[in-house]
Length: 397
Image 1 (cartoon, rainbow, N blue to C red):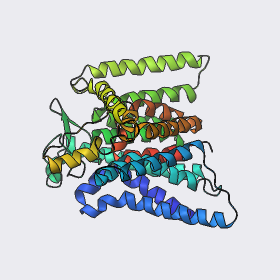
Image 2 (image 1 turned 180 degrees about the vertical axis):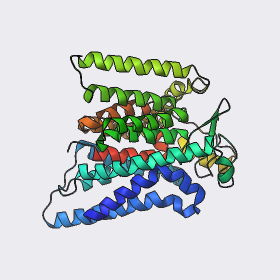
Image 3 (image 1 turned 90 degrees about the horizontal axis):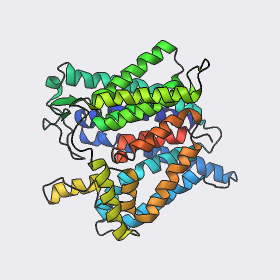
Image 4 (image 1 turned 60 degrees about the horizontal axis):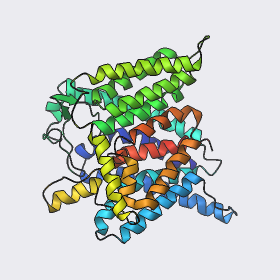
């Protein structure tokens, strides 16, 4: 079982940055590869826990595990009592995936033989190279003429995508193509690179290879034109400066302040370009307010399935329009779709993760605080699985 969990870890890490390409180049059933791996993990955990129970183990859950389980339970109940059970169930697939992934891995690590650190090292050593190859693939499509080779597989309707449909060759901003690697879009791609950037110190490379790796990952994030991811990169690199760089008489406060101001200056310069300065910024603030306001009307039962990708997919079929409300904020999304109980369990889970995360992973934790407040990032299943996995593997205990 131990070796199987290693192989499943490697499979997840290798394929998550390529999920978009898998849905494009392979037959439709292959898009469910990640669910198959999760089902195998569930089976592995159930078998392990059954053996532990027969040996006299008493079950106990950490706050993060109990909160994840509570979130999934509330979501299941609200989906069952929903007026549209099928759409609500699809919505819970998006909402619950990071919680389910985290819970499975976290229970697996309750056995001392199943080392978090060993699994995290395996994940890192596979995930980062996979991300680098995805950057090369995306650069080839956008900058080196690869689009003409693969255009028959992708949708040629640029900048338009609905979950379940063929993804476009790329998304554009002011006529400039955004790098999306082998993912379903530039946001998904850039947020996977954020995870790779945060994991980089675990490779324990020498100084020059580390710098080159950071520059390559940073270039991928920049070419994705994701402003949120750029902020996340600033936070992670600032944390590195605080934790890893030699001070030589310079106080940590001075070092941290200098790095933070420097990276913020780069971000300000970047936002003056046509790629970074664009419409839609206000929606990152107005949509969460609208979601919280709508959630107060049904704060006990929520509006599960009436917001987000499940609603978009349904409206495209029934109304021939993919327009549906989006919260643009994970906390607001929990509130409007799952009501006060889902919100409390979700918030409790996230806070417990931040409290329990290892020091080396704290920069990633800080970055995710910003990122989940600027988009409903867990609507993108590779991010939900990647982050849920890393959260579980990077816990102290």
